Length: 337
Image (cartoon, rainbow, N blue to C red):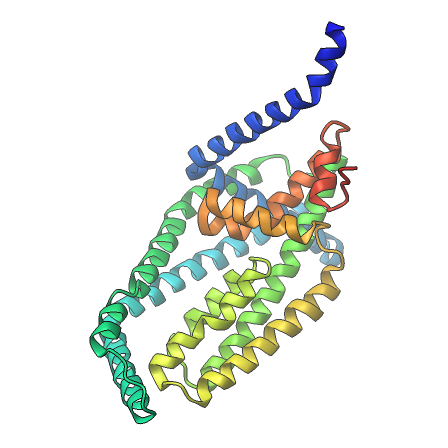
């Protein structure tokens, strides 16, 4: 009787223990984010560099260790230049805050005149007060602070990468490690390529209509493209406020909106789908949930790293019968029946 009662409560105990373990793990992730986040970024850099080193050896017979060093150095150089460029662009934008505030007031006056022309009376003081409270520049400064934080952590990332490279450079890895490295590296390389393509096309469109901050918006497009579903949408509408302040509501905004939407549709739904195939085999709902979770835990960088981290966890969970149901949930294959 007692044994049957204990067995009846076993699933409840298991669920409670899983909730406690997940809560503890989340607290650890938040508490150690200063160290753990740069380490995870360094691990991904090492994976990509290792894959490229293997390709260089196969293609041009470059020694694996030398190829690893070349790939890692190139990757770190690109990250450093991107962070420095974004920092400079945001600083330039913030320094020109007075100009954009003046343009915003001019746009507001234009809106009031147009509304009165059509017999619509708007409260000018109410609109002016609310426009003044818009947290646009606060948000930009916040993004700038995030970039500066990344730049500060860059030295820590480089240190971690050096220590990873100092390990034994070997192509022979355990099956699980090799599988994780192959899938994650393939995903990251494809995402880097399509993100560069999206950023380049975005820059061409914005530069062709002489959009201010076109280069910064292109770099932000590259970064946002790593965030599934939400990132491409944000990068599509991000230039619109700048164009509105620069030209007002005219054909520039409509042209940019049409072209950028077409670019992200073709790249995201045709090219990326074709090249990635099934991708990381993650359920779309799970991707959104993990995106929210990692964004809450690690902020912007958590959102950028959400998919590869979740994919790594899924592959690890698949190796044990105990955690296999969790892997099935992440893949959208689990049934509660």
